[in-house]
Image (cartoon, rainbow, N blue to C red):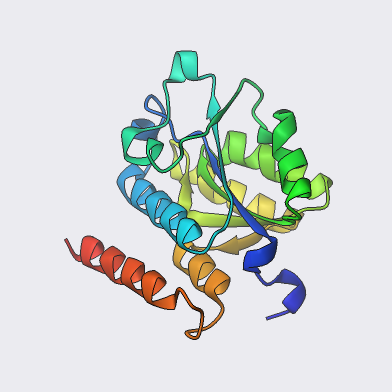
Length: 190
């Protein structure tokens, strides 16, 4: 892997976009997406990756879903599609020297797309956790992922991101990450 595109924990932040009550049930494959969002947030917490979250017009679309709200106590409200319309988002990334931003959430073709394009324009490295993103229709998600990859975003999955942040089995928190991965595997088997 080209080191320039590697997901480095000390340079990373996670942004969870609009996983809200009135939106999530409409998303194609929402149950898997929510499990993957929770896994990614938990992995980031174990590895001290700063996590940010947004809510699109929460008065009308409701708050972040209960399954994730406890993991995301601070959620910035917005009405623009891009999270970059929230001034503190880019300011905080820069203040913390976080140049590699992992995006996850909904909808892929609206708020994730606009946020990714704005972050790329601001010279951030953008990583799409494609298995923790979604749209109401699969085609919207698929085309957006292709479009953003062409624009310079880097595709990843939640498990790949967490392992890439960990970097090696010698990481002091590897056992916690391993336990998280094993719990995910058990949950997937049902």
